[in-house]
Length: 275
Image (cartoon, rainbow, N blue to C red):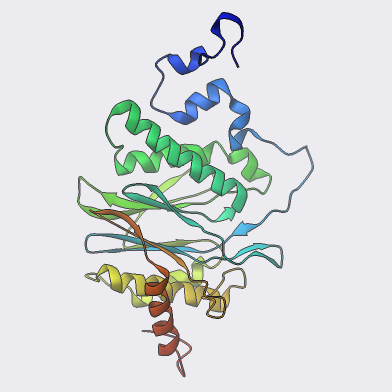
């Protein structure tokens, strides 16, 4: 806070031209606020809730991303209705797996990063630019990841230049890889990927791909205890985002209930699901 003659005025840092990166601004003037700058005491460990399975798949004209709602801490269910899929900006979505608290902080910082770029530059960052910005933020969290607090997001969006949906995955060191057609991250990802290979095909509509990702999450929950299945009793459904040329929209509960009930009904007497 400024004092004396400058009382009531913003600090000089807020009045000078800076880069288009909000993370760089915070790192220069208040680095202690960045989640990656926190460290645990040497030799200590911290048990925190972890988010699990995120799946995504393309359709003609965009991409769909979905996440289950369970967070676990060891063998305990820490949360049954956690949101793990967020809008990055108007044309992108990001899902989180890993240490939930740090992952959510990172996503909020990423959202501000994209807004800051748009305000400074007067234009949207390209989809690859957004993916690379997220990679650099993950890379800065490597120290925390080495202490067991890793964040592994999945990023997808609509490429306005190429007019198609694209998917990007990451590793804990910040490596960024473009995936084709579909992908999954988290503890149930092996089972979800098997389901995606089985039921996804080119030319599906957005509504059909919503059913595909719900089917994949169902298969992941069937074999991975850390992944939560649709909770019909509590009316807790997966979080599903559809990204297309019109932007990001989240599928409503009523529509998701119909999709989930159709998937469950199709598995009556057929636990293996669709083929």
